[in-house]
Image 1: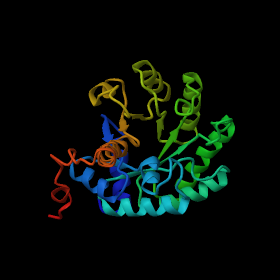
Image 2 (image 1 turned 135 degrees about the vertical axis):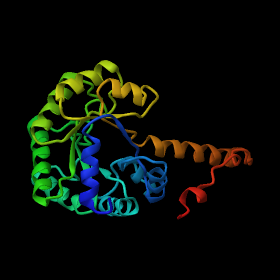
Image 3 (image 1 turned 180 degrees about the horizontal axis):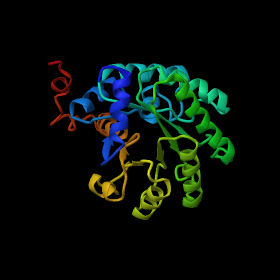
Image 4 (image 1 turned 30 degrees about the vertical axis):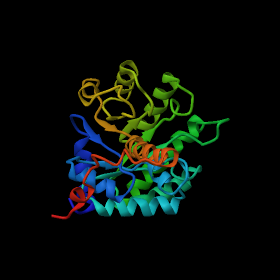
Length: 269
């Protein structure tokens, strides 16, 4: 699976049946560790990566994101899906150009989301949002890579938790050429089941960013793919922030015990 074509083929096969977990590393080291744990695919996290740069989510520039994708894709053998935010552009033609750049990094898939970053108008208008997915589809087809395109609707993320509108958007993204559909922050069985039914037979990605679901439950609801977004990165931040805050406030080091042997995880065989 050392070639991009091989990874794309393997990634597409994973979407055909069952349910797989695609955890989200935030750098090369965490990607290698997850691959060695046996995960069959990985996905980047825009938030986790931005935090390594000292910026909030959506704070990375396009050139930085592309270099991140190149470095992580080159470090692992398993398929890598890119959290490509909104394509780092507004206009469909520029989204297409940027998708072509991303496809050249060695990734096996990418997602395009419909959030704007503007709190007053947090989602792109319906027609523009669909046009952006169509542009991404055309760009991928023109590259000949066959990478998996995921259409994301962010209503539940940006404070517009309208299931009807979310489903309308996801169905339109499916019709526009998205291979997989994704609505982050969906948390109830009823919401998940409704989305799975609405876009069938295309696969659905579920964000597991809390203990509201298990792999077994997600599979029973028809979910094909599970990702964790920035949750693994947040788990790491939680541990070291607690340790650092103890040092700063108390001058003690009680959290420096029972620590993992990271060297043993990353040693080459």
